[in-house]
Length: 632
Image (cartoon, rainbow, N blue to C red; front, side):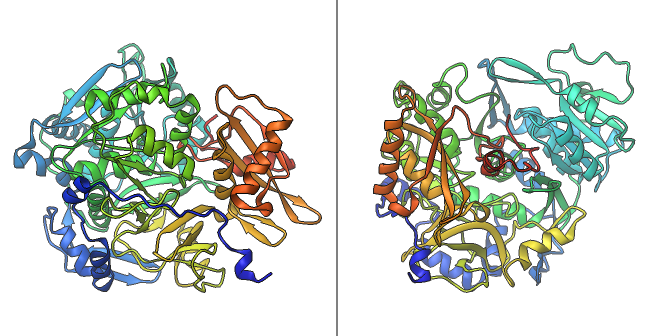
């Protein structure tokens, strides 16, 4: 069999969904093709034009300096990202516009306007200054997704301190590693968060994590019920005591476009987490622009991203990109299906949400509960649905489109990474969507699908996804480990190696097929895990699936599937045979799992990605490696 045939994509996606006329009429981008062409021909001119929509204390001397593999964007420009997220709107008459509607797990609601948020951020920024925090110092933030959590990020950015947000569900070991690596001067935390009706204490985790770390000078604690801080330790400062004793005026620090904004740690498959470093100017411009055109944000929109501030999605598409667009956002704390699976849909109905951005893993969770839950609520305010975090399988896409979007919403399936900072491949609302395919490259972004030597592969064959040219929101380095940064650019010479498998079709739509290290090689056929999992989830009994490759003496590797069933379905030998037949029908005999095991839960990161390497390690009795991002 020819190599080309061996690498062919098994999952065929033929359908196309046209966007409704009213969405196209109002879209910021109406003609993707010509704007994309223009953006690639004059990359610097394109981004300069976008940057003109924001405010700068001093304009740039040069848009891009590219010394492979290091880029600098908007050289010589001075700005402050919080000025563009807050002051700019307050000065243009949006002082009393609601910035965030926060809802906790008990349905307690709190709203904060742009004017109030600017004051809270300024007071907290002054408070941090009074604790000795200055430009370039690192501050670790271990907070739930709350107004206080967002304000902590913005207060650091206001004074030029580099924030490192650590997801508030990480263990003390994972937290300590990240505080230690960043050498944080101050840690900001909360007394607790709530999940599934239970109080999850955060302060004891911080206390254990910083034990013996002399460089941590202060811990700022948001004492939610006023009963946690006894006041004996001089190291601990109460959040609102600090806020209330500080001035409401804080001039934003003049930041060079290339000054660091934040470090965000992403787990490596082995070894310690990587501290991905993002800088100010380019990140601000690309998150602002992608928020605007991908979610098609307008003045009157109510936007909701269900992510956590501990992830890059929370940084770019809850905080910086969204505030830069001056819209109203919903943020929530707690589990999506607690106290019942109608929680999220009730908020869309109540707040008349127009744009909703979530992860495929959440969609599959709701599929498990059945369509009767969303059917109880009026979801007619929705216009744009977004997907993030992993490839969305066609079955979940269809369910989302039908039961949440009422077959009239556009689905934007966004591919990007902690490292890229902003959307790189996605469907823009004005052109047709294809279920299971992310879409086309973002403006000025040039991607390709190549073999291990960097040769371009033909359409509908599986290869490595690479980015060929620099983009404004790209990571600048890995904190303290430039060699780890350079590895992204020298794994395949001359391009950024994303670590994902992909294919593109004749029309240029890109399909992401999972991580390159998740590929299974069955009798010379390289099969992406996402394809087999999609075929399994396509069966009416299956809610979620994960597949791994196991060594096989004849085929090289065999496929084992772990399957979670929907409510009302029971494991049986008959069902195993039925599922195998179903995969054979959808993908062909080469992709049929040799083994299928029914389970209740899959190992996932806290952002919802399935950790297949843990399943594989357990199955083969191997070392599991870094599990700091594991949910449970």
